[in-house]
Length: 289
Length: 186
Ligand code: SF4
Ligand code: SF4
Image 1: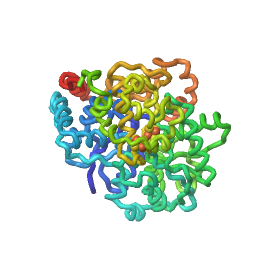
Image 2: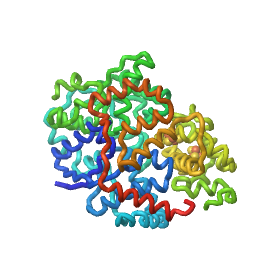
Image 3: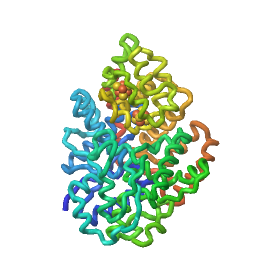
Image 4: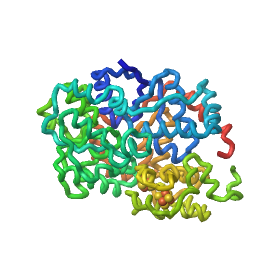
């Protein structure tokens, strides 16, 4: 069994609790040991860097320093944490003076970041270390006949820390296929859902979400699958608002990829946090649960 | 360098983490053409970069433009000059805040503020506190329009009302305080 330092991220305690529950269950079932990073703090996400880039790097670096002590790769299920922690890591790698300054600050809490931590996405580690063949071998309920629109989102692939093509990501497709389900191609696969702008710029983001949902539905998808906590929250919790604004009737469940893997592995709904989904996925998944 | 007025704006931007690529821009407009939010920017992504290059410090830092960036990184992927516009726009936001600019026509800074406040309080973000802080600082009545979404999340156990504090909160404070002491003008 391979061990990893696990960084759940703040959304795992709230809006993306279903991601955390399912990630832990699936990792266990597939032989990945996730050891939660002791006393991790928020990575800072986009907002911290936008208000104070340098302080944001320092705040993210506390996590990197703590993780470095474990000697294990750090994996996170959250696309935004993945980008933010990697951004801090690369800034320090490329600018020794900046790293020295960060370390001077970290020393106030007896911490040091040497620069050896690997920050990885859970889903990437699943594919690279466990492999799709091994996942396929453990599938108990092949998702035959289920039509899925895979939605990778932006953060995971585009800043180029990613493992997949930035404008035509295929990793998620291959997971969906390995589970026996059918990938629905749709043109807006790589379009942004609006991210956290849904709070301050709701009008624009509802429009972006409408296009995605409309496109996935028109192409025959029965559900959307995503690895990203923000995409899931937007498309799931705001789907009703999209419906009212655009006079639409979408009723498209939005699953975390780990939830989907879990269903195929034969894990029970409560081990996957399926009851946390707002658009109820039970009807679509009934055959496989 | 703090004597910002003495230094030209392009250099100032290029020294903020993320702003390094500003000099590489060749104004091809690919970022603007790729941007899903360009239509709500006061000046488009490529215009804002041109304005930085033209030393229009005040106009840039007071603009709401960069606050409309969704961090989708489409521009970063497509930029033929590796400007990394996404990071560049975030470095402009960072500069605007540092120098006390209060951009009009955007609530994004208020949202970001509320987010960071929540981190500074507990070491982690409480999404509930973040939202409350945001609506109280902008338009409490707008929160009413959010009731359906909030209820969706609350009733599905996705919006805990209480915040958890990390054990190392003091450590985090010390680290931030130390940075303040040593960062100089950065
Ligand atoms: S895509 Fe790059 S080079 Fe072209 S205008 Fe935008 S920042 Fe400049
Ligand atoms: S990262 Fe920001 S500026 Fe670049 S395309 Fe996306 S929303 Fe536009």
